[in-house]
Length: 255
Length: 290
Image (cartoon, chains in turn blue, green):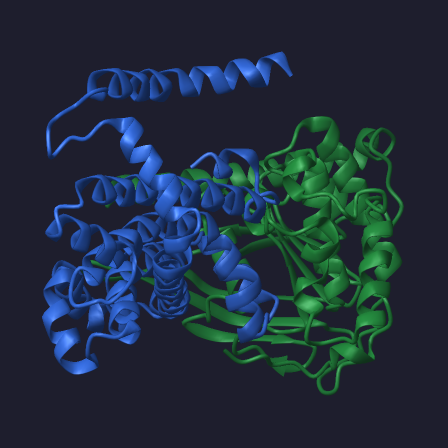
């Protein structure tokens, strides 16, 4: 009990200090661009509890999570197949490298042109940008599975479905999750960027619209909410990761 | 991948195996004829094995020994179907082996890599049986195999929570539950301590007794080969072939102390040791003149 409280304190002292500094230095601020933290937090309370949470945050989170989950599913399936078939991987590797090097933001104009300004476009852009870390990590993990495991698969005549779902997927899981964590950050970034282009709602749209209307306090409130959401998503991801890796030897979960 | 083999797994009951070859002579479970193997190198290939021939009878315990680097693991991989031989023919249970077969169960040297760390002990043993047997039969066979190796108290543990010797027992149980008439073991006790090693040796003998499976075990330990085997096959030469076959006349029941102090044990040790030493020396000379 005391130990966990101490642990929390060790993690929290710096954020508390920084927020305190921000609060003190910004109190009574007359700057248009850097309003007082107390005003921003007032705006967070008024705007995001709960009016804009429903109108902007909910659709944003839905798009972000849809895009992220699609990216994970596609990345894992494609990675399992590519990692298992070295010849196919050799054939598609140049294309993959090219596609990965292309920033998803650059695809945004094309996506808008083809898919319009709706949610489909946003989900598409998020998926496209977030798929790479999962895909590449899964491919590398499957390709790197110990040759002994391949021998076990063949020697015991393990069927194809079990090979993929019971052996290769779990063997690659720690690395898949490491990739998915990066994908999650990319998803949040792409969500905000995609919403700054012709969206009628969403947190990215809210931040940009507030800025254009010189509602600087509102703009800051959106940024803070976004930061908090990102932090909470990361905490949720860590909890999920720990649950998924609970059956693994301790040194592997540490990664 | 092809699964060859005349035995339909689901007709077996439990861990006990009663091989009935469909073709071929019933007194020979394994026939290895003129097996050769080449490994590709930068300039052509290197011949590791040439004209390796020997037989294994059902229920027989055969140990393969030889100087290190002679190709013991290569011949085992050929018999397992993991690495098709370049020349010659391997027949198991009457059928010519073209790939991994349900007639062959395998215990790998490195248990830490051959077991799936995320699966429980029971799931590891059940993995090869998943699509072959229905649930009740599968569970029955897994339980029987884990009882046989003395791990019935640890079915729900993860392999990495167990000691090295226990992990290798899981691997033995997995091969046992697979129900093949032939068990291949590649230096299975190389990475456990001496006490555990002796326990696992006795376990292997008991398993063979109870299941009637034939065993081919590779080892670099001469005493181990004499203690376990009904027959010792010595590989030597470069490329390697069978340079000697020695019958071990101790019968199926052996004891770590009394068997190992028999005068015949000492004689066999001397004979095998001399054979391996000579083979090793001639390999060294060949290597030096290259």
